[in-house]
Length: 306
Image (cartoon, rainbow, N blue to C red):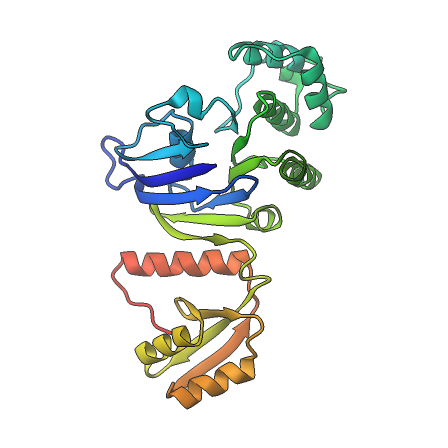
């Protein structure tokens, strides 16, 4: 459904590239989290997908159409909440939706009413937006994004400023969109716990580079982290790989069905001079922090050994 292909972007006067040869893809009906610290390249990536930012190199595709060469076709079925949603403060929520959808040909009143009810804004839709709370504005923005009946939804920090109840409701809505309509979603967020609960997969950016792409639950459900340290680090690292492990700095991820005692025995029998071998709980937060640490160490030229 969505493909980012070898994209690089450096803004004029910037010391470093906002994106440096980044590639990833999201399949139809999947929910993908785009993660990274402030300045990692998340908003730049969404801007490129919307055709608002032109890359220096590379190309983005939506539904097989190039955003750079055929923008109208590529984004014709894309809904988005990008940066701070902007509305006409002196108009009602209903009038805002009518005006904003008119730019793309208009939407029937029936469709607007159904969408407004689905996002839970029907009781206040005829009030002026100037009287809306932040959460109500987010609901209105979601309604606006859904009205074109998109196949792809791009969300930039969609739960920013929402209270806990609003976050839970938003999570329910996104999962319902995927399950009921087969919608593909790419969302940028800094709330790792929420991403872990709603996303199928994640892409992690660090300093404009992609440092991880994979399943969000691969470490919580399918693998277990072990903290591994050894006197013969390089040898032990390779031995862990031979046993099916994936290296993340000081940690190694093994399949959950591999018993800790069997792994320990195999490492010792294979010649690893271990000083530490301890299982740790696998979570998206653990994965994110460990990958970020390894990426920073590589950028600074420091090695990372098990």
